[in-house]
Image 1 (cartoon, one colour):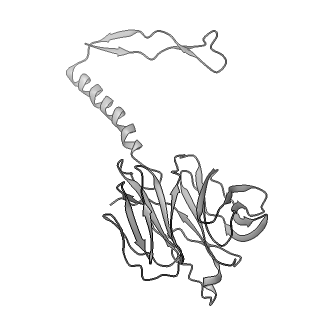
Image 2 (tube, one colour):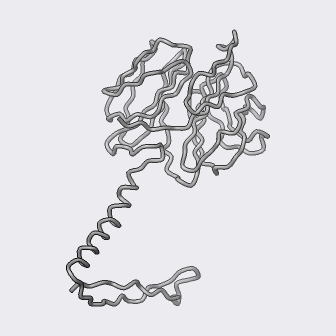
Image 3 (tube, rainbow, N blue to C red):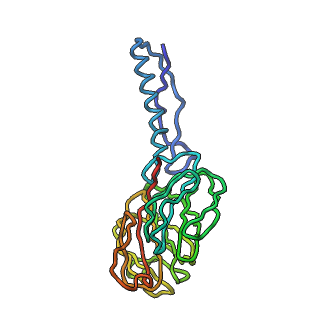
Length: 267
């Protein structure tokens, strides 16, 4: 014999206010079940109770995230093509061609001294936090990112490594601001509705560079990396963060805009 609680009966409760309900007292029903019936109930309970725990381990960046790690990605915002492999503790980052962005990788918290492309800095990641390390021609910068936790929204992160201070990401027509002014060497995030819409970079109310439609999807995070010098009038849309491939003698002077969907790689 086992006890099974019947679902509570919902009824409007006086004094609870509109839109609320109160539950009547539960009643207990005694059932006689054969052995196979008891086993079936136990199996169903196990499935119901463990499924949410398994789903909770899935992250919004593509893979389940380890509970005891921080997450770091590297950006080669320079012309350096000789970086080879970069190690942070026991984690290797490879394939860092000019103007590329790596996936996030798990890094154990601690104090890490970074030396990349002739520049040095210190990274002290906290458990569960996200970081973007950017190598420019002049410096190595650590940006602390904001984790995206909204499965119903998209996240836009504007990283400003251009000559302009206070870059904004607006709709292409400039009539609405998606990401407010970002200082040089910093990043700023905003949650937006995942709709088809084109964006552009503005500075002081003036159009600098077209970004286009990044193809926003629910639950995904997109980095808009502004790198380099003078505006060229267009941006590169590249989910894999490969080089733009422009054949231009003045590439070094042009601004580079990479739009990259965030990815977490756990090995």
